[in-house]
Every structure is written in C-alpha cells, then in structure tokens.
Length: 276
Image 1: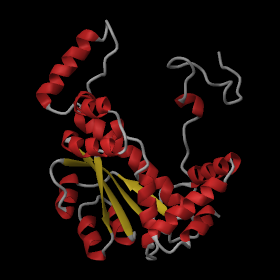
Image 2 (image 1 turned 180 degrees about the vertical axis):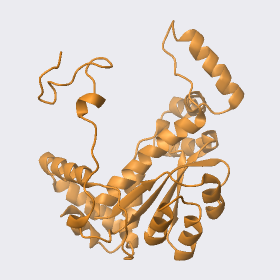
Image 3 (image 1 turned 90 degrees about the vertical axis):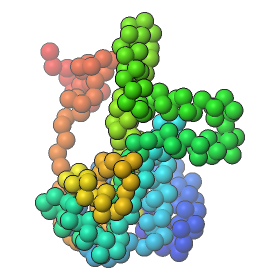
Image 4 (image 1 turned 135 degrees about the vertical axis):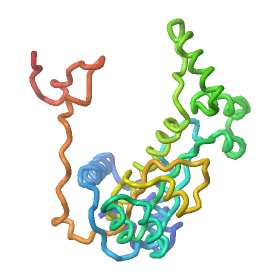
C-alpha cells in the first residue's frame, strides 16, 4: 500500500513530500508492520523484467539511501547508476557467471564505490557541518577523528596500530582498522538502505560480489581512489511475486545473538528453554 501510493507521485520532490506525509500518518504499529513485511519479504532477485524504473521512484530511493548512517557523517562512498543498455553490456563483461546476465536484464544497476581517501572529503563535510549549525569544536575536530578511525595512511596507520596495542591495556582507545575495511563498512550501511528503500517501492534487488573489480572500475571510469564492495541490480521481477524464489534460510537466532557476553544464551528471549 505504501509503495503503491508513493509511486504515483509525478516528481522527485512530490515523491519525497508524499512519502513523508504518509509516514507521519502512520502510527508505530503501522510502521512496524510495514517495515517488518518489507525486510521479511526481501530476497535476491534472479531475473528482471525489462520495465524501466521511473525517475521519480529511483530519485526517492536514492534520497532514502543517503539517510544511512556513516562515521562522523563522512558519507565516504559514491554510487554509479548504470541504466543505458550499452553501459550495462560493458559492465556485464566485468561480472562473473550469471551476474553478467542479471546486469544485462536489470534496468538499473547500482555500483557502490567506497572512498579509500576519506580525508579528501573533510573540507566539504566541514562546510556542511558549519552551514547546519555544528559547533566550531566539532568542525575543527573532524580531520583528527577521520584519520583516527578511518586508518588512512600506511605509516600513520602502523603507528596508530602500535599505540593501540600498547595503550589498550591501560585505557580504551580505538582499534586500528585498514581504511578499506572502514570505508566498506560505511558503504555497506548505504547499500543496505538502498535494498530496503527499493523494496518499499515494489522493486526487486540482487546484491552481488562476483565481479572483476579492475574491469568494473575501468568500464565506469571509477578513480583508483575507490574500491567496489558491492554491485546491486535493481528493477521489477520478471516472475510474479508469488512465483519468486522463497527466502533463503537463516541460522537460528540463538546462534547469532548472545546475551551479556559472547556465547551467553538468548534462548529465553526467543521463547525457548535453555539447553544445559
């Protein structure tokens, strides 16, 4: 219902206003059940119809994607939308196995690129912070915290790793992680938001990691500064909703979620008896 009502909006701006009005009318139970159904029903689509995704729908999905969280609001990613058939054909040559066919079929392919030099974004983010009323202290501290948590710079990263090892027994300090791990983590938040925003409009998606990154970057003129964590096909499914593949199985929640400490039983949380 939510997706159908918003899809009829004529322009990106009216689509966003309409979705906001609808959400405001939801009580918590409505929003809870709608989100629950969207997440539970999402599957990786294996075959796409040729129907195009309307621009206003795609624009709203992308705006919602941008609402994903990121460390210090750095948003260290870009996303290339591949929509023209010739461009998709070129990209398909960089995909592995059946992923090439999916790229050729899907009317929209979103290639998420993680920034491996996030400090280059700092001036732009600082200006945005200043323009939106952030304190001078927060604005001035951004370069330090970005370097500290993103792990940018091999030499500096090695020094921070050593400091972390030495100081951690005495006081809490951030653990050093490679920049690619930090940026992939931030980009994954956005990719996940894209999947669920697309689902809200009745679109099907298929996130893929089977590709030749060097070829993908060459096909789309993506600078060396970026790495590619995921490529997402997006469009309308070729099969009716009821005929699509069933959701893939998941581990039992008690194997994933622990209470109090790693390994702590959550059996009672999920209405089960503790196994001794």
